[in-house]
Length: 623
Image (cartoon, rainbow, N blue to C red; front, side):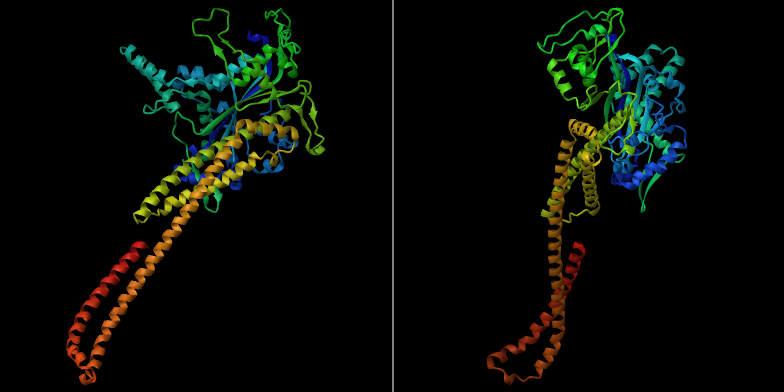
């Protein structure tokens, strides 16, 4: 009975994609070095903003359109600063403009519009969700899909609306239907061409390639890529490329990627903001007995009475209501098999959770007020603010009065913005962890090749490849340091109520564990770099010894040459000396000395020149 529990509020689905696919492959190293740099942040705030707003597909969300209560036009980041959720340095150094998509500026091919899957899966989602996108200084696109429920809607129906975003295009079914059409319409070539064109346009629009059979292409990620592509097209303008100038001749080129069915590195999160929760009176009489633990069962058939508000703090005491909140957190919905649903019955229902599971879930409620609920889990957040305070202004005594005035609703929007930021930090940590693992593996392969070549006494240093790995390792160390700073909540959050929520969410997302793994990888890379330096220094020392050896060999050869050229003078002096001055045994040997000298005088220059030539070859080779 889905009509028994209804709610007013909105849902935000946060999608984060890596910007890397929109960078020219040759410029990816420059892009990785530009993440979280002041130059890139300023480029996003100035040049990108000017180009995006000049094309008409997007408008600034800071005009107040992003606010559900449109009378407030203060940017969400500024509200977060006013209420102590963010400190000034984060507000100044990291936040970039958020843009709202103008759907009326988009048009699709008529043939594509007639495709069944496009109309059934994509068009319905595209029409019902407001889309916001923000390119961040960390090198990501943060998209926020927002759907408002100004009139009460059953929680089950709200959950099903979110599930539609996760629905996937049936690629294999489209290919199978294409083959059936060729058989069934073989005699009607006109109809065959029309339907075949519709299916092929659909497959081309998705970016499906036959050699890569993907059966799972979620609607939300394909829609996210369409929005990001449109944003980059506005930045690039009429040309095919755009150089993001970061100063000092540094920068990278943007590109429009070819359509692909698989998205880049990504993550998602769902926020259920229940402004008011209403339940049928019959459900409110189904209450747990806190003394005995018993549950009083009553009839769930509505008796004509209107729904009544539910105090958020009473939710754990009403088992049926707690069950549905638990289903929002887990995101599970059951559907009966097709063809087995009798007329008038619902095909979908929530599963029933254990009482112990629900008790653990509500123990993690980190709201600070008695009539609030704030459940932050790794994939879903359920926020139920105070209904009585919804129109009140919020003042915080621990903050200066001039910087703490905001509406209660806008404070919760700042909390949602905080959730987006913490999720972005998690994706940054995931990206660094993956990159550090890849760089570590590359270093190990290079080191094995270096050792093998060193043992074989071959030249092993390929400078370009080694220097590129060293550059990546240095950039990883920088990003790890930045990510650790962003995950230190005290550095960018100043109010205790927001600090508690951010720390709890960071633990739920496992950012500390990711950064620990990443730091270990970076430490191992640093050790390998030190080992590589030792090998390099040992090789330089060995080369230096070889240099000295062959230089001395060459000098020795020159000495022999000079010695040979001095022999004739020695012999001339020797002949001027009489034999009588020598002993008799020496006088017998003296006649043979000229012959020996002639032989040595002939061989020594030849050997000397051979040694000089050999030494020169060895010197050139080791250089």
